[in-house]
Length: 113
Length: 114
Image (tube, rainbow over all chains, first blue to last red; front, side, top):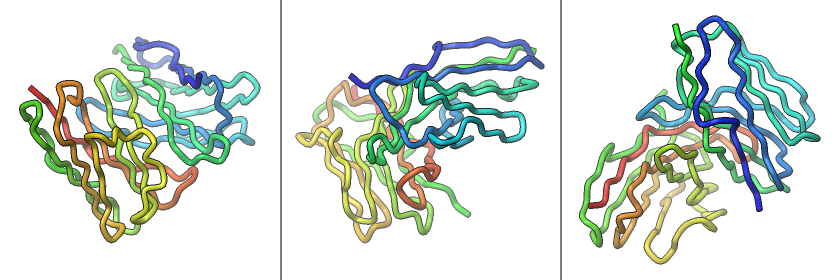
């Protein structure tokens, strides 16, 4: 069966360190992968998109990698700040031409001052 | 530019009652999604529209859920009758085109069925 797993429900990181979140998928062949941030009581907000033919994407302190062999994406936040505390969701799209966007369960990240 | 607008923000109803949620997407966005999100889970797609056509409603429980997108703009999601297990956040999102473009989400409607 198809599955999208994000490494852990919750992750605590010391301020200033790099936070690394993992998204693993099974029985998907996505054309692209997106990362979203969700704060309590709010809808998800788009952060980054990476396509299957791209290895890495960067945006300010954010970096995403996409390994279609390992079926894994890593999401890094460098020089983390307490304001980065939120739930982060990965989403797969373009699976065998299907444009449905399927989300993982999310990782709740807390940056400790 | 206004974002995706959803109403109501919160809704409490008794089981077996009907309920409707409304969504106004970003102007010009052809693709509209309705997602359901349970506590601690990621959003799950209920239905996706391209303009006024429902192109993916495979996850919509059609015995009690219905949706429409008249004129390819605003959309309404209805549940009739509501069950206790329908308590969740219902999110609407829109994007400028299908396929890899980012989805813009509304704040959601938190439904509580008692």
